[in-house]
Image (cartoon, rainbow, N blue to C red; front, side):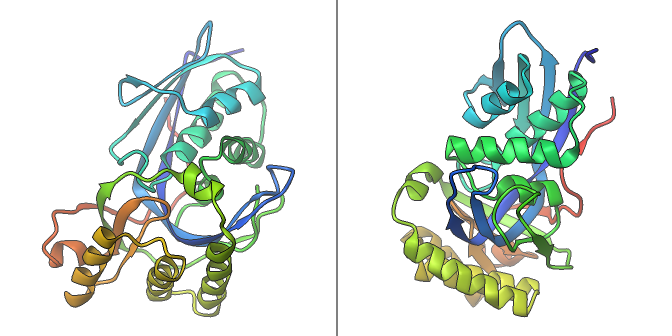
Amino acid sequence: MTDDSSRAFVPGHVTGFFSVHEADDPEQAGSRGAGLTLSEGVTVEVEPAAETSMQLNDEPAAVEAVTRVLSDLGVEARVTATTDLPVGAGFGVSGAAALGTALAANRTFDCGRSENELVTIAHAAEVDAGTGLGDVVAQARGGVPIRLDPGAPEYGRMDGVAAQSRVEYLTLGERSTEEVLAGNTDRLSEVGVDMLVRLVEEPTLSTLMDSSRKFAREADLLTPEVEAVLEDVDEAGGEAAMAMLGETVFALGNGLSRAGYDAETCEVHSAGATLEMD
């Protein structure tokens, strides 16, 4: 039995810091780290089709993780994704598209999978595609997720900062996640683990932002453009950090606008990915 179509909403996700953890099994591979899920996100609609196709914001798109999800579920579908978030700028759009596809396709095609199974399928699809390591599990959880252990729900222990905040963001350009992850990530991961220990010891938004800034600097990921914005926000008394992996600055409260930037606004998304009512 199939429904005509189903829709899911998945929050955006900005990572402040992370460490890479490889494994032969994509369900066990992933990242540890922390970030924010956002009330701005990706809405995904899935409907049966003779062959799989995808559109992102009314343009034909090829998101490998989405194709892998549908293949794993054994269905052919037309996937329509819409988002106001910048694509390729560190907001977890590919992970959101994969997770939204899994949730919506499960209902459309009556696949009978549980939430954890669907998160696992989407996580493994994104790891295999090389487009992300921890967005999917964070987006499934919502809030201010702390990824204590890598991997899908069966393996990846999670916690979170118990806080809510207005969030501003400013995107300066795109950066390829695949290229960064394909390079040597040893130093990046070493710093990421140190920052995770700091945050676990003091799980506050301030610690998250401070650790994220330190991570970007010590892992040598800061670009001059991003660094200049971070300095402006700091001088204005705000808290900001760089989104991993993208040329994007995110700030708590009104940190960016107070520093004179024309920033987009949203807030921490208290719930994780959800199916929408028909």
